[in-house]
Image (cartoon, rainbow, N blue to C red; front, side, top):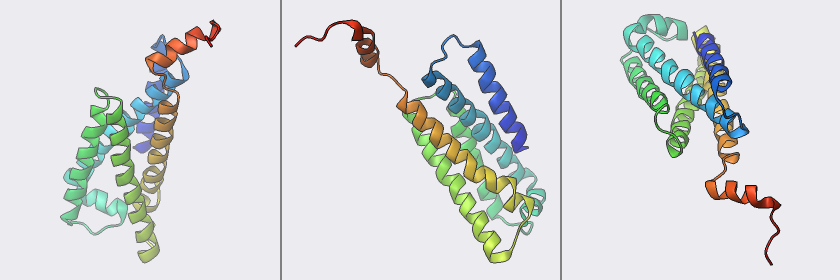
Length: 173
């Protein structure tokens, strides 16, 4: 399922840019970051919430966990909170995105640590523990952090734009 979320994210971002009049570097980073936050994190985390809460035994089997753990409900609720956070990124921008990327990256990288520790301690190489989930828990935060840094680095404040436009004028001494 993660591959579907990735494809929707990439196709959505490309179509968004295709239909957008502005295609600066900053706008490209902004659109890709937006789609990663809303689709990969927002919708993806809500999907994970539904799995952990409503199909707990099936998800536990995919991860290699014993069925029936009440902790799985708590993981599902954590996923719900990150899903809501990701969806809210559609409406709220700027420092909200920074906070969202920090929170989501902390959760995902913590999950990755848990998967790796579980693999090393128990040898659990179930697909939901050593496969797609582990890769996503590492790659999604890295992509989010890189996109956020690039977005912030290419952002021009209004006064910087004015100074840029006036570069052709002689400097007063």
